[in-house]
Image (cartoon, rainbow, N blue to C red):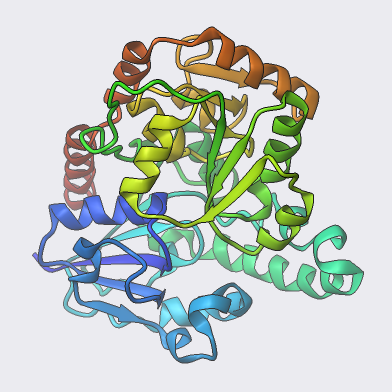
Length: 364
């Protein structure tokens, strides 16, 4: 069986890329298709594969400015030649789910989320506060068109699998499709405690984009008097640096080993934005560290309030500051925190994805 794996873009080793790496491990001969690939930005296991890119790869500064080419994504993903592939697995949070498979092939979409900016988070990305009034007016018809295209092409996947119940509900709302839930894998062998005592500090590991609400973490830590380290990069970097005081450190993207070390040393890991799933809280918990997260979205499925951290019901910086202080003072034991994360390991993911592939093949 010839297998094609389709991913939106490969520009860093984040949650979606870790899912791609795990699925690629199931299919060692699979070819990878993506809109844009920044060489060296993902794991050696992915880099070693044959990676085919769209025409966007050849556009000016595509590796850095690929988001600016968003209106071209539909044409780019539809031009992939998937003739000769029996199975297509798309790992999609934007356009990958709309790839056109060959006649007779089967297409399983592992949906990270329906594209946020075209549906319910337009204001977070392109509202007047972000893009200015002229920018908002220019982007609104483009995003409306993109949302219509996104919904109209949902039938191209034979079966949807969602990363969380939260995402399954969004798939039902925007695509009118049902979806099983298979939680993404966490490398609980790599992310593990080392017995060290944490510092009274907070950590954020995240892409620096608007919906992640890193500004909330900065303000809350300032009110709590807790130093904050931010690992990640993105278009919000400049704005966040202007907001940050002397207690905030920006590290950019660092190696997996350095991220693991940061988890082990942090007193608490923060998730202030509404995530569709959120792999960072589970990596932190696998290292025995508590998480303070917004009580919405995927965090409701990954953080056990009072056991592995705290779920905060509001986006008030003062409430977040209190949750950070109380979690640090509670010194929650590492063993139950790690035990919770073990239920999200790789072996479970591989078994469940194989079962989903079997179901989509049986439905031919």
